[in-house]
Amino acid sequence: MKIHGLQKMTLLDFPGRVACTVFLGGCDLRCPYCHNYELATGKVPPVMEEEELFSFLAKRRGLLDGVAITGGEPCLHRDLPDFIAKIRELGYAVKLDTNGTHPAVLGEILERGLVDYVAMDIKNCPDKYAMTTGLEGSDPEKYETTVLQPVRESVDLLKKSGIEYEFRTTVVDELHEAEDFEEIGKWIKGADHYFLQCFTDRDTVPYRMSAPSKEKLEACAAVAGMYVKDVRIRGVDGLS
Image (cartoon, rainbow, N blue to C red; front, top):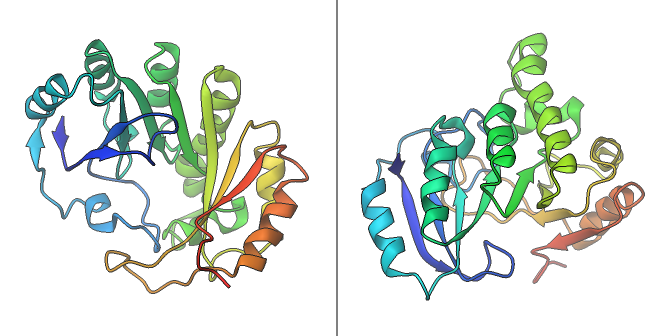
């Protein structure tokens, strides 16, 4: 496994843990608001081999207690389960970020008990998924088979998994409306936690997008809250 980035310590990426964040390259989506777009498209070269990462983790035992794995899309890598198993052998809890497009890999990880927490992105309501993931020109039937159906399978896997997980949506003013969250709410009904994350612009984002207003975020959360018992908003500091 090639490592495309390493944040050596974070208190934010893994709830309740002092963790590092490992970035893996590649993604099968092209979300226009992605903060890691160059990493997702493979333009960023690896920064280390996995042996160097394991050396780092071995030295940080006692200082760190968790490893968050993100991307890109980590589940694009078929050897991800064995990679996580090696991290766990060092005594670390593991959190996985995923877009849900590879339920076979996610299912193996869950079946083997390799992760302690999963955060899965729900990009938008089904009718707006292709637009939101930057694949609007895709053949609708193929998109249903390669993206929407796998995402639905991953949602079901997590709801039945018995581990701690969250669904989350990055809310972008140009891409989301409050009514979209009724369909999302119906889709993930029965989930334990659902977070609405306020989009923030960065130089790495490929297209200029805007943060929603605080009122819009609250309206979206209210609609989702009709279907999911625990809906929270992240990243509203400084919004008017």
